[in-house]
Length: 170
Image (cartoon, rainbow, N blue to C red; front, side):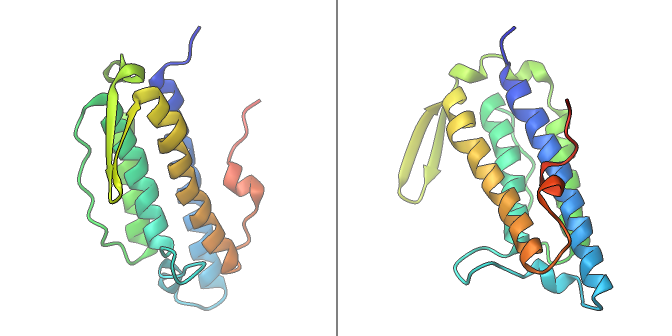
């Protein structure tokens, strides 16, 4: 049995977004346990030229819902980047999950051969759906999830590799 584009994308995004929600929960709890305003973590960043935690979560959301949209031809919901609190970030993740999980797997039929054009500041990249998912969308998505993890870890949140990996199925 071959791997469908739906199976290669939606369950992967869903699992990682649930992990991201868990990481945010643990980061917020850590800040509170330290007597800090948790929302100061939302603006934390690893380097001056990197996006803060909020930006990493927003980009993970955009990358996953954008990939589903590009692969299916369906319009993704607009989500303005206005989150400044953990509660707002959790809502963003929940809204992203709701959209991704609502898409009918049949909408992905033929997605591997669909032409995907990605307009970037330096020009337009053109992919097949399969190359887009495997070579751009998934790596980009996971970059932002792991960078959110890294920001929280840098702030001292007691999270580790198993928190990032989430529940392991054998």
